[in-house]
Image (cartoon, rainbow, N blue to C red; front, side, top):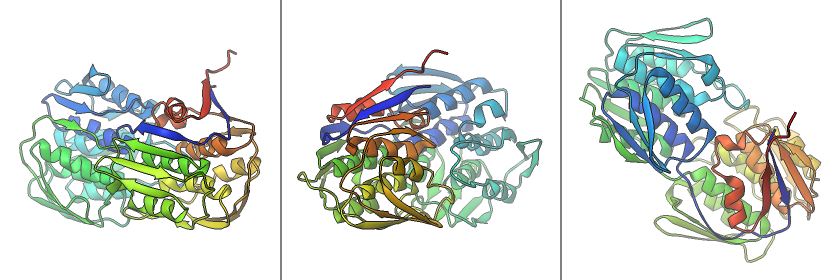
Length: 422
């Protein structure tokens, strides 16, 4: 099993390019199922979840090719199978996003209940209720979601929770429905906006993306797309936190500071000097140790749950005591035990952790438990004295493109070892 080894104690300095957003590219790839016209997607990151999505589309009958290193061309005209099987869906929760497009275009879909990181209950009931409101017959059969409809129609849908994938699935089905669909308590994440922008480029008429009410004027003819994915705000935030923890000075290129307001504010509270431009973010710690910050996760535009593990790691070596509260997922502190192995002083209290910053951490062997926890452990390894070895790093490959190469560009002493032979 592959592992990452880090020799800590080196400040991050320099500049690094941010990849396309994982949580935007996946639903946009799925959106190609809405049309029989060719599609072209640019700024695609090299991630395990992207590979899984391409395999899923190809298994359904899509033709997928590379125009260049970061551009994917898709032709779903030949899609003949409306099923997403368990063997692919079990590894990636976003696979459920084929449900809306398949139902909208073909009138039927059969999708395995999704898998992904074990970070708590992430039910798909909002997806099912939304599609049923559009006129679909939706039920679960032998571990598969089955949806069928002769014709979809617009509806007023009020989501119980602001689910990102639920909003996206309903939105993609709604563009094929007759009439107007109104989605209230919609997710406001930038990735939802990116999907809406892509759908509009295909000929859809969607208003309000980025607010809590999205209006879809359905039934418009849809063409293919030629679209560029927005930068990954979580990857950018992770590099910035790494620089803050190590007392460094970095610039993230090809990044959008407008999508990171909550994170940048917390970094400033931690003592970082932040400067931004249209597509770059500069952070300078001037060699200083960060100050502890309190964080409470919340749906966008609040503090992102996907940055919680990174700030937990930051507080572990900060001056003072910080409290991190997790309100989005109930099982997202699995990295705490691993950080304690490095010497972190962390106390778990229900849905919060109280972290008393230590002047130093000490390297140790660690085990990655999920995608963002992996990132937090890598950042802790950057500041720990001695050697930190992180096993099960396949988790991190689901959401970070060549993280050891990019951190190496910033001066980190980090390298990956291939799986040992049996």
